[in-house]
Length: 607
Image 1 (cartoon, rainbow, N blue to C red):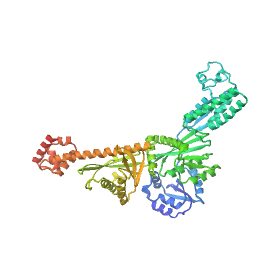
Image 2 (image 1 turned 30 degrees about the vertical axis):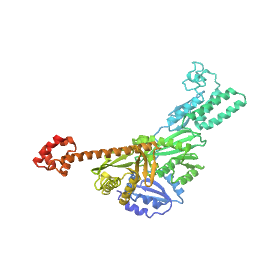
Image 3 (image 1 turned 120 degrees about the horizontal axis):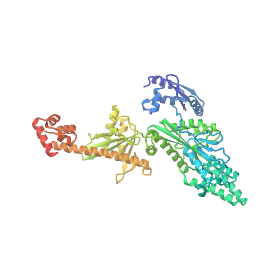
C-alpha cells in the first residue's frame, strides 16, 4: 500500500474545481502519468479513494505515485490540447503508448522503360518509385494483384523491350490476364497509360478510377474508336466485379477511418481500418494493455493516435459512443483545419465496417491473451446486451438440485474469460430451508457465499463481475433482496430455459432479454447453464447415494446416523468402505469390537 495516500488525498482535496491537466510523479520526480480533467479536484481525488476497487493498471499507478503537479487551463478543450502535447513530450509509463509490432510494406513501381508494379518490403532500389508505407502486407499484396489483373499488366520476369518476341506469350495473355506486351505490339504510350491508371487505382481507390475511366471511354466513343472504348469498358467492369466479390469496399466516396476495440482479461486491443476512395488501403493493430473505462480508453487512443498524424479524414467511425465526443471533434477540427465527425453507426454499411474492424481487433487480441476471437466477441456482446460497465471477466452461476427434502444441494460454477475455472467451483448443502422452496434455497446459498467473502475467506474472493442464476425473474428478485441487505453490488441475472431445457433468454428484474439472435452469446450462456446443471446434479446424485449408504449402515444395531456419517466421510466410496478392516471401522466410528465385526459382515454381504 502507498504510505503517502493520506498526504496525496489531502493535497488533492485542495485542488480547484476548474479544467486542467495533472501530472503524477514517482519518488524520483519522473512523470509516470498525465491526464486531463473537467474539474481537477474531482478527478484527482478519485485516484486516492477506494484504492482496492481500482482495476489492475490504476492500482499499480496509485502504488507508485509519490507526488503530483497540475496546470489549470481556461477550458476543457485547452486541457485536452495540453494533455496531448505533454504526453507526446514525456511518454509517461502509464499512459497508452501506441506500438504496432507489424513491419512496413510498399507498392513498388520499377524504374524500367516498361515499369512493373510489385509488392516490396524494402525501399532499396534507388531507380524505383514506392507507394507506402502500409502496415498490412495482405492489403498491399491484394492491391497489387488486383491492379495488375484489372489493367492487364505483366507479372512475369521478362524485361522489356529487351525480351520482345523472344518467347511465346504465356497463359495470362490467352485467359485475358495480360495485354501481351511481350509480343512487342503494344505501343509504349498505351502501356505507360495503363501503368498510370493502375497506380491511380491503388492510390485513390475504385470510385475515382471508374469515374476517370468512364470519361476516357466516352471520349474514345465520341471519336468512334470503339475498340479502345471497349477495352476501357472491360477495365471498368473488372473493377466493379472486384467490388461485388469482396467485403473490403465502401459505397462512400469520401475517405474515413474505422476505430474499434476488443477487451478480454482487462486487456485491450484497438484496430484502425482506413478507407480511401471506397476501399480498404491499410489496417493497424495496437495492443494497449489494461482497460478499465471503455469510453476513456477510446478517447485516449484517439488523441494519441491522431495527434501523431499529419492528416485525418473528415469522418471516423467508432464502435461505441464516447463521453468526450464533442470535445474531441473540436480538438481535431482545430488541429487539422477541417470539420471532423466521430460517428457511432447503428445500422447499414457503417455498422458492417465497424463489425469488420472489431473482428480484426478481436483476432489480434486473441493472440495476446490466449483466447479465441469468438470467446472475446461473446463476452463483449454479453456486456453490451446487459448494459454492463465492463466486460465480465469472472462469471458465477448457481443451480439448485434436489431429490425430495432429504437431498437438497446447490452448485456454483465459475467461468473466467469465457472458460470454466474449475478451481473456483463450490458445493453447498441446503441447511436451513424447510420444504421444497427454490427461491429460499437460492437465497440461503447466495447469503452463505457472500458472508464468506465479507469474512475475508480467500476462497470466496474477489466478487464476480456477473452472477447468473439458473432460473427466471423470480429467482433474480429473491436474490436481489439478499444482496441489497448485505450491501453487495454485483450484476445479477437469471438464465431462462425453454420446454426442451435449453437456454432461451436472460431474466432480469421486471422482464427478459432475448439472446437467441446472438449466436456467440447464446452459445456461451448455454455452455454456462449446462455446466452448472451438470455440476449440481452430479453433486446431488453423489449426496443421494451417500444418504442411501448411511441409511443402510444404520440398520446395524449400535450404528446411528452420526456414526454412519463419520464412516462415509472417512471412506467416501462403497469400494473403500468395503475394503476397510473391522479395526478401521471401529476406530473411525468409535465402535466396540462386537459392533465393528457385525458391521464388517453386514458391509461384505450388502455392499
